[in-house]
Image (cartoon, rainbow, N blue to C red):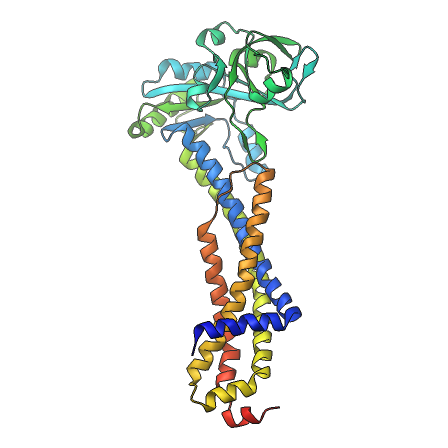
Length: 411
């Protein structure tokens, strides 16, 4: 028995029966396409989130009114009833905490337009109110000028740091925006800095934003009824993370008047927790892709079995001749299983390429860095092999059971 010969026979059968082979291979390709496409997209999304979380550092955590991921309207209503985290509470943490290296506070509102003379942006600019520690905690660099200072926050100055998208639209001639004036909601701001380019994530530009002092934001942009700030705390070391979170909980419960028997009315989330929550979300996407691919592969398996049964019928005399000259039953079985596996791998190869190309196009649309999911590719190769063995076993067994004399007489 020659493995190479068996593979060549399978490829020859594909070329000889083009239409029949096309529909069978198409079913395999669709199944693997779904698996690889979803796998590539999920891997790219997870890579982007993990990179963003790593930039904050492993010894940081976020304090907020509600969790970052809410799965139902019932949960949303529950968390919305909580009292907002106010600026005075954030200042209390800054003044009292002993285990924190750095604390920053932020909130944002989208849907704004930035105007400079006759130049203006689209009405989708994100205005973020924050403080002087934001840049270091969230790894935002300053390309030109300076960032916000403690004095800017204390004296509620009308100063602003522009993202690159805003600078390009408001200063299209390429001139420096530093010390120039821009308007948002009829408020005039002096440009003090330009953020380094961050790029996009999930199709959303991270440069389409401006930063102003949080005190100024609360005065002109916040919703006075339910505005709640997010506080990001960086502990002085990874080993002190638990102590830092315990201190935060104690201080917040005191300042928010939470009774000893009551649960916390705020959320504390570490980077690890957020990434785990996101991973649990992407699992559902992965299961969906596997389910779709599984149904297509099941249909493909039935088609492959039919092709191989037809092949056994067409090659009855050949099988009889092989057995007449001494071919053993297990050789015949292995030969046909190898041919079936080859058919599956050819269809799988087309599916891998198609799925990867589709994920590449989608990643370009939402501006994600593409990640090649080697684990998913190896899984697809294994699935195709399993498919070949499972659905090729019966035709191979039927070929091996043929009587050589009757097979030689077959017309």
